[in-house]
Image (cartoon, rainbow, N blue to C red; front, side, top):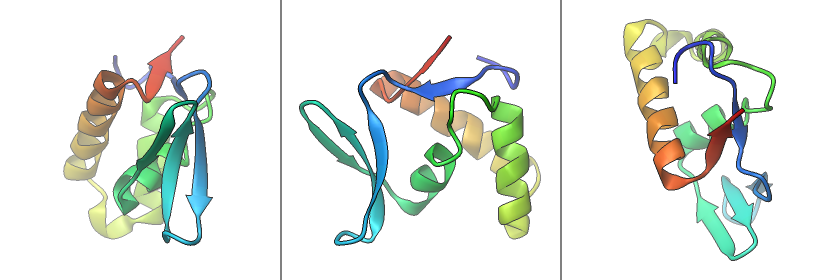
Length: 91
């Protein structure tokens, strides 16, 4: 994985806003994963077309207080963990 890698949600998984819970969730055939605000913000930008650098750029625009190397590193670490958890895949 690098900044040019294009993440996509795992096949059969879907991101959804759950108003009752006030958070994003990942739905999959066997259940659901509740996401914290940061994970929901990142995964809401995963569309199978944006690469990781574009996701970081968009988050930097949305959250300028977190812009810089720390935000980029946090996003990269999140994608590493999301891949380990099986939430995302790369083509």
